[in-house]
Length: 225
Image 1: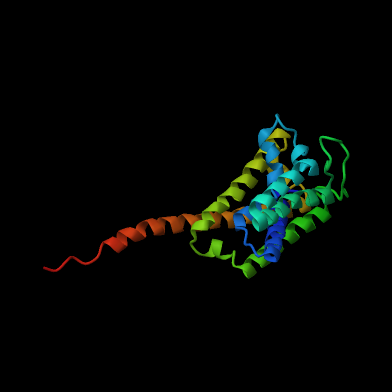
Image 2: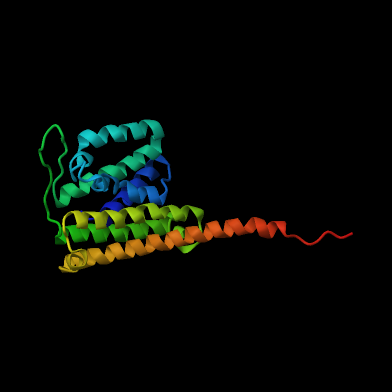
């Protein structure tokens, strides 16, 4: 699955799990959790993509530590991480027992494919709906300091996409619009990055406003003699 789907499904899993355990994972963490398994792209050629970071042998102990250390927040974040493996197993395969075994598990619906496009665009639509219900839409509609952290998933998605394309000699511009399914996913990526970018802008606005406020508060009327 592409990073549009991974980030969106992660957001949905994290937020819905958080609601059950009564914690509110920040939006930027909910979005980036599902992208983390693809961080192995940053470490190529030292780590081969789609191996250790896509294995339950590796991820389950990490998630267990997160849950023990951070309780509900750790559980919500862990569901986002593991959603990456669930998504990849639908459209392709994952090595759940790596490095103990090279066994591959998955439905292999195809990437790209109509099924993948439906999963990714559908998840994006659900994220927009859920964000409007849980209040996260305020991060992009009004100045909030927390909004600046949306730069983390935004930069992650952009850099991982560019690095993966470069590592595999993929002409990104031509590939992005080579099929109708890919065109829809490309437009979805662009929309998500645009929304995150607007959120970062709102975060910067909030920081600037907060830095100016003490100056205004300290400049009162001159003392009367």
